[in-house]
Image (tube, rainbow, N blue to C red):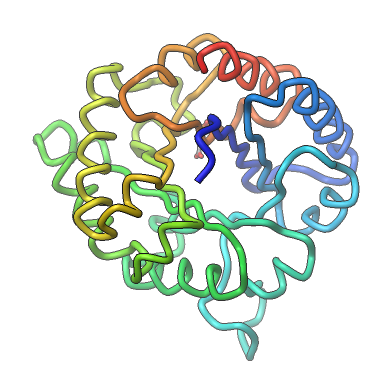
Length: 250
Ligand code: PGA
C-alpha cells in the first residue's frame, strides 16, 4: 500500500463528456502535487474517455456485477471495467446497498470479482443515523466488514475501506473528529483481525460531506488515509482544494 493520502471523487450519476474538462483540470493539478494519490469514479459511460484524457489520476467504476458476463441486462462486469481502462471500482456504496438492495454477501462477491479482474477495490461501510443514535455504529460497521470484506490475506493488498456514515452523505453534516478517529481505529482492529499483518496496510478513507473547509481536520483524524468525496468532486475548483488540503496535511 502507498502511504500517500488517497483522495477519490465519486461522481455518482453525474457527468457527460463536457465534464471531462473538470477531470483534465484535476489531473493537471494532481501532477503538481505528487504527495497525494488522486482518482475519480465517473459514471460507466465516461470511464474510457476519462482514462484517455488524464495521466496522473486513477480512474474507476462505482460498482460492478458479480459475474464476468452473461444475461444481466444493464449491468457492467469487472473485466469490462478493466477493459475500459479502470484501475479500481467502488463497491458497497450505501446508495447501492439501500436503493439496489445489495447485501453484505453481494458486496463481498462484487469485491472478489473486481479483484479477480485485476482491479483495486474501495469497499464502503457506514451506519445510519438511527444506528448511531442508538449506540450501534461500531457494531453495525463491524458486521458490514465481517460480511462484505473480500476473503484471503492477498485481497488486502488492493483494498481500501471507505467509512461513510449514511447520515453524512450529501447532507453537509460530518461526525466529530473524535467519532471519526474512534471508528477508524475500530475498522483497523477488524482489518488486522481478519487479514493479519496485511490488514495494517489497508487504507481507510473517510467519506460524507468532505469539503475544502473540513478536509484538513478530517484527514488529520486517527488512521484516516484519505477521503471519498461526492458532491465536492464534481468541479475541479472544489476538488483541487481538497487535494491541496491533503497535500498540506501530509
Ligand atoms: P458527499 O458524498 O461527499 O456528496 O457527501 C460522499 C459519497 O457518497 O461518496
